[in-house]
Image (cartoon, rainbow, N blue to C red; front, side, top):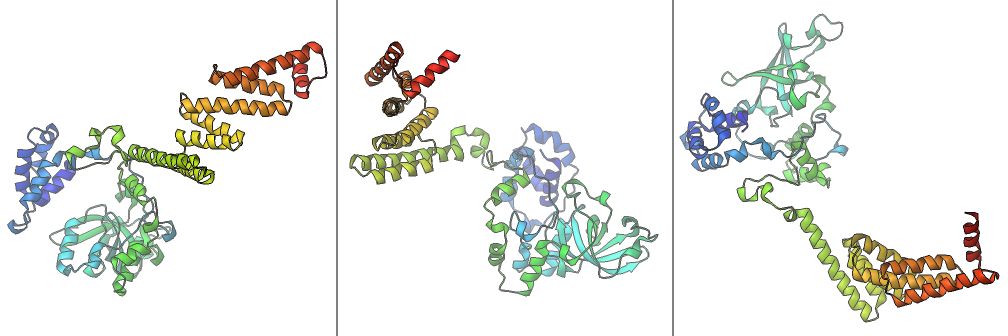
Length: 446
């Protein structure tokens, strides 16, 4: 179980949750392995009026799932630069939700101090420079936590020892001026005194945010969500839905796949809080991709059936449309390929008919009608080649037809006749058809 995450949950919910956990997870060896450390967790307490026994009971019963890292079934995608051009948004970047809610000022400020953590990235404006550092008025978050903070009157100190030297300046502070926008990382938080200290040292960043550059930023480099927050705050017609629909990322057809990849959740084996829906309990044929394929096959077969009905009524154009529709739905549908091949053969389009029958046999080598119709169509193709005096090629086509159905009387008779014709020309030495002469020359030269 994720020890840190479990400790955070206990810190918030209090000792009553810990007691419930010990009852519900008493036989869970993963919980027993961390229970000694959890006994030392500090409890903030929310007051009796805010406690929720139902929530605590749910957490306790589902703890082995909620706090297990195994739900992450894929490797999380590396975090990109915090600022992206709007045209390249992979998902909708929205202002903080509380901007659209009526949350009291003091409550928002208290929640921010409660939830802010070391390592969070913030952006502020310098309001005072002293010999020991400078003070920032925080205006927005730029990584990790995303909150509406510009009007909360939050101040943060960046001590001189947390400022890297810039170029040839002996005094690191000489590089900074009042009014500069600064991107910094939260170094420490005093929740009781409501004091925040930040750092500009890259070494203070850890984990997936280490690609973020700290220091002075321009107005254009501020996070996209901040720009949209300012816009929403100044125009009451900018509702959450209107801003959402105006984001480029909202219209990205791959947004779900992108977000799943970012947090490391596999779309093939999705997690679930319901034990009966745990992905490992499902058979392969129960997943959406397999079910979707079955649905496509069923739909395609309905189109084939409709096409056969049109064909029997002599409506060949409508029949062809249905067969093509079936193959659009299911590219390798054997019945659709066989039916379309039969229609091509009936119309005398021999080569297309042969192609469809061969594709059908590639998918289903033992398909009875595909073999039968291909054999018959090859015999017709052999006759065409005979008329063009391509006797040797025709002979090969007849042999191929017999390899599919060695009992086909028409193919047997055609092969017998063409074999006798070729042998007769050879014995008599008369002028041979062009194809036979070329074939004999090749035999002699070899």
